[in-house]
Image 1 (cartoon, rainbow, N blue to C red):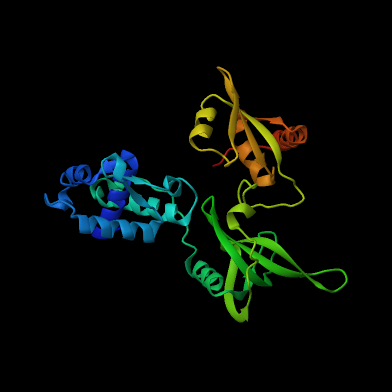
Image 2 (image 1 turned 120 degrees about the horizontal axis):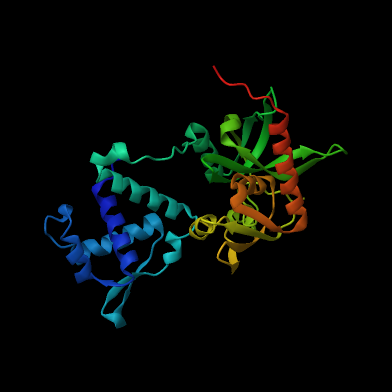
Length: 316
């Protein structure tokens, strides 16, 4: 990924100020002159101010000056670089791309995880969102041999576990023959085609994409499963993984011993959340609620039963 020179300067300047906490322009230039790209020449105040404006426009990062503290610069809204915003994702992607661009000699020793782009389908969905146009979507479930057509209003897109999803409002017929609107999530890798219509729609003014998924582990929002307090016990190294990469924004550490740490969540315990718990094996245990403990136990017993009933054949 080749990063243009100006983008490299934006990324470098943002990271330098972020990691310093507060830093003067003279100190910035002292660090800048050490870089090969500087050719030993300072960033002029005019260039610095242009970079500040560009960084605000591109990433939403506000670089302020504290005149009472020696005219030192700092990131006013540091949370922008810590949350799940598009600006943070873009900045992180460009930052990693810049690092790789500067270390091309190591490209065979830096292994990345592939993330699908979504291709033309994602572009069409985003265009429909931007223009407020309904779209006709052909979707085929894994469990179905035929595709089904939906007239959908795209509300937002979300990336989760290397897959793109689109949250839509669609109309469904009721028993009395009327149409009833409901929210549904579709995976882009199961969408066969998307065509934009000329029919316009207006997004609900109270809709907030982040709040909509706030109580979910991933992309499942099952209104039949209410959000509740869940306590997980992490053993061994698992507790350190959870501290570094929380499972959910509501995660809170509530107790710890030499062997384990308990984490509390406010979440909908949907099947994707249960699947994650099971994927961690003996290192993650449900403490409460009791019904979730029973569910996980039943899933484990069913898995063991499959292993006990299957006949293993040595491959040739």
